[in-house]
Amino acid sequence: MILQAASAELGANDSVNGDLEDDISQEVSQEEMEKASKIFDIIEENLAEGVGEPLNGITGGLYGEEIFNIYTLGGAPVGHAVTENKTFTELAPDTVANATMNIFIDEGETAAAVFEAENPLDKFYELKGDGKIKMDPVGVGKTIKYFFTNIVGTVVSWFT
Image (cartoon, rainbow, N blue to C red; front, side, top):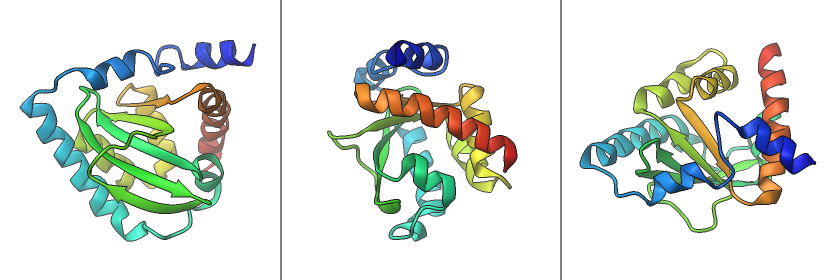
């Protein structure tokens, strides 16, 4: 029942290891690879200093134990980020085999918009709703967790 609700909630914006993973396995164009490089540069510029720092408030609660692989919407690998014990521990320009969450971003301007926003969490959920950012949890347990964290994150973004 919970998994069905989670799958229904993911519906239009995200998948459960389905369509988005198909995008990863496709060969990607040079244009997508250049887009991936630009996205990583923006992420690194905004997050590199945060490696080793604890995640604040709700972000640490929702995403404090994750391994994120980041891709363009076209499937080009951007990089990966790791959080452990509610601390941002790693950012690198490659993907890893043991990711717990895949994140897809349409372009560098989308990543920049999140970092430049007065309320980054709110902007993240806005862009996610617009289809410019997609999240694909890996595995059944993460899918169920994502269903609930997506609801909590959306509600919290209304009040921040």
